[in-house]
Amino acid sequence: MPVVSAFISAERILSTEEEGLARFFYSCLLLDSMSEGLTFREYEKKDFQRCVEITAKAWPELTGGRAAADLEVYLGPSTWRQLACIDYIPVGLLFGTIYSDLGALRKLKAPLMHATVNAKLLLGLYGKTPDRLAWIIGGIATEKDIRRGRAEADGKIDFFVIDPTHRGKGIGKDLLQRFVEHAISRGANRISVDSLEFESWEFYVKHGFTKLSSTFRDDLHSRIRNRDVNGYQFVMDLGRNAP
Image (tube, rainbow, N blue to C red; front, side, top):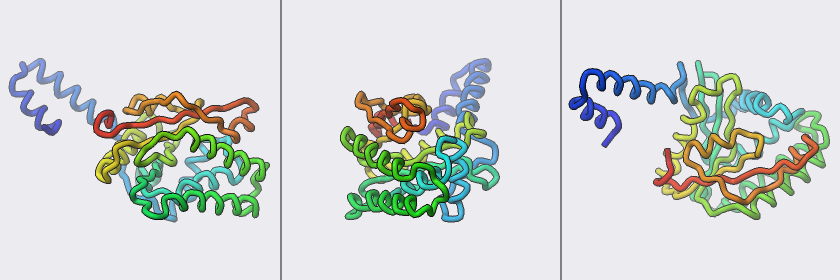
């Protein structure tokens, strides 16, 4: 039964006081994932620079051209590219992949994009990026480590970031919900996501993901922070844990 119908049916048997409380909590439920003027739309090429700005604000360690390169490497292979906007200005983005939508290109598209971005980095097409070669080598090593322990899934979240000045408004929850619904509509049974230990990985657990025991080492952030930085993989079994 839809939530609204269930609420209407329930309110007929509630006392006046209970009815008031029910209406209050129901309105809170609706407002929990709403932000004034919030809309959603597909990513367009014109949004690239704004998305780079959001990425750089969220992860200031991605100096030079790193934010642009990091965004592009995941943008290319993704099959789902959704933006959250306030007053038509992007404030959050989620790029994801449903593997069945990649068809025959599934095994080629992501490696090809990585190679393209690495070549552009070496040529300086992202600007003056420090330690370019070391960053490329580290990225390759990290990806290999992730693949080694990757669980079976039908899709994954590739890139997910909210403008820090707009966090706490339910925007991330809404973006995630839209991707989950899309994954289910495409017949996916499980999706996965990777997150570093210093990121807000608790968000995924709160919204239905299970944290796996296996970890991977992120070479780039280990260099930046001068210590080992580990990452974790999370999976959501759709239909059971989906929010």
